[in-house]
Image (cartoon, rainbow, N blue to C red; front, side, top):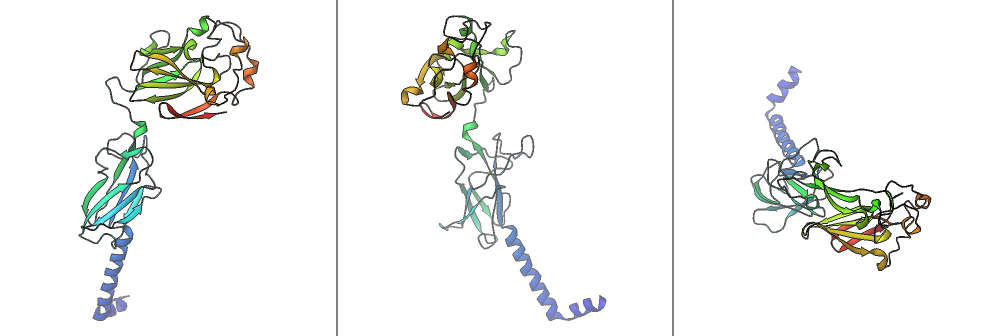
Length: 310
């Protein structure tokens, strides 16, 4: 080993060649790692910081990243991979060059989050080499206003019996609203619950879509065993005007549009009692699960909706 080392350092020409080789290897390695790199991630809480647990904020794939060198108007282009990572090598981002990085082509309904520890803006000015040129993006559809009371939760309630025949089955709440942080016992203190609609107003519902601008909450009918339908039957869509005294409106029966949601399996056949504590017979409803009524609604903006029906 000593003899080999002695020969290497004694031979200046070999030593010089080795040095050049090491420099070239260093340049290649730098290019492989990326002169400019970063990650685009989904910033769930819009705080500009990427969390790795509870919940982990994943990378966003397919985001377009453009790199402009100096005053050039022709960018180098990269797309984030499945981990949200992108990079440009030294051929695209020469050392010490002034660069402009632009992010675009976000997933539908997503936009840049707030600037923070791990997130810049969607246009950033840097000098190569540079790493951690990151961007957090957030889903606009998941945004809610941070009010003093916090976000609200709405849920449907199902009342046994026929709500349309004037008995107790029609008087119980079918839709309620309460604070996200509320706690308590329903029927005792109702944990700040707001009873938006009774069973006789809307019947059983499951579909829900909220339009923030008009403060209208739309709900749609769904078939449930032992639970009678509302005034509009199996194709009923209703909305509650939360900005105008929580008024209830029968909005649309989709059957009038030519969408056949099927016959009401129980209400119109007098198989359900008017009392919510009476004896119920609804054997016909058992066989209509997944066959009658609407399966779901995808909301865009009222009154434009996409209906999924059985």
